[in-house]
Length: 389
Image 1 (cartoon, rainbow, N blue to C red):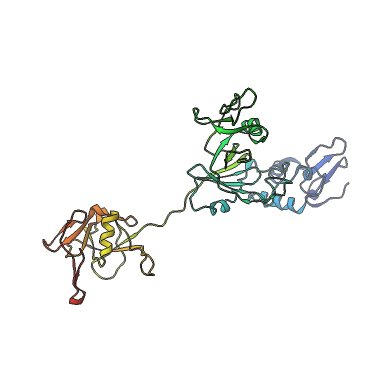
Image 2: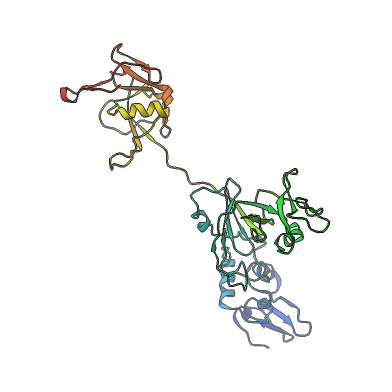
């Protein structure tokens, strides 16, 4: 009887077979066939593990010992968390017949490369990552030491393309070489009278071909939407080196832009001093929001922009992001008045809904139509009394 090791101690052994301790596996000495070395009901349970773990086939078969990386991946796969270390092509990727989720590529470099928010993010087979922008341009972060094996070229962020389109692998193979051939006066260009198609266009007379002519057979479709399996074609200039043909796209995800900070935060308080801000949209909200004005510039801003915006930076003071209002059902000569139904917390108040107090009539007039009249600031101190409009 052969020496028992590890898990195989619980399994009866036959001297016609070799046994191994990564899993209960036995090898027929004559045929070399590998099978789970388990009897009866135990076989089904062990088979599930046998199919689940992430180990190379040559480790299963006992042709070599598992490396520490193999063992770690196997252990993590049994726990259902995928593998921690990249696997080769002959390694299993499933847990009990369920495919484990792939990790998303790291897009942090391309996201930080430009102030504009991209529409889509995608990566290619050799590890380069891209951000696609609304104008159809892209920025690429070339994978270091992978994108051009043996070339010695460094990875990192590349210039923003003028435009990037997407073609299938066969079409790129068929016509890409003609574009990149410096001895041939033909370049890959969009076909003017055939939207969504590109072809090799002659830049000068060459044999039977005339300048400006598209070579028959080179006109192929393209898309402006990145898809898995497509090839990104980045345009930088109309030269043989002015186009970069990428590798097959392996991952695409829509980019969700970060929510921009609101232009203003409107805070509405009760007439009574104290308490938290009132909630816009509440059914019992007072009819009006009123605000006193202490700057000619604020009135001018409302009329010029058509909105009630926060005060800009002035004389070294930071810009203010908040507008304060008092809720009331009976305005009492406050300078500006807005019906609360026309307000929200994070949208500037539309000037069409803003009324300004008219001391001549004791009433309110629409600020965009009011001509003449005056608002007087009077806190009892004649030195500070002045008119605003």
